[in-house]
Image (cartoon, helix red, strand yellow):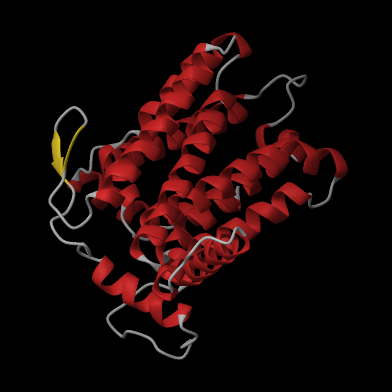
Length: 297
């Protein structure tokens, strides 16, 4: 009998497939989707940024790899993946002897379905990552938390359009997931593991979808470096537990703790609350050598 977690994930997957089908059927017309509130998705066959993404992918599908729209500011990761996916679908349909006209090789419906697949993958990764943070007896809590994150409206509703968002989020999540998964093996064997190679490859693809994802690549890299330092040089960083701490050690530990709390507070203001004070404080801290101060210790 399936668990509550499996049922919740299955319901989420079916909702993606169902809404994607409705979009493909009613694409030429205005369509309203009700999910806690009415959200207008589009009024024309090609919606907003698809005006740039879809024609560029068509050029690649037709073999014109040297053609590039100067108005596009992202790397061509989405268009390369879209071309490969469209070719795979076309080959599969041809193998099954399904009547396929040439333009359907990279039709808008086929290309939009890529993001549906990306978001189903993102749902799986989010649930897995959240479950890592909970004890085995609270796995359902982690799954529900992950589903709530996956239902974030900006992420969910744009998953049915041919945008860079879905693929970029999926590969960032995959990069972080495989980095977490391979951490224990790397520390045990003292060398790079296959999980970390996959994580690095996913990071490269994520940057190929959106160049701003390089920030997330550096973020995951920084997390792994800090974890390695803490795991292999714990005594040098924080002192030995057996030795009686001197007043100087106590003062140093207190300052380090205060500094960590300050960084956490500033980042919370900047990234979660979107407070101008937080951004100014963060910029000032970085400008005054805060990063160098941490590395020097």
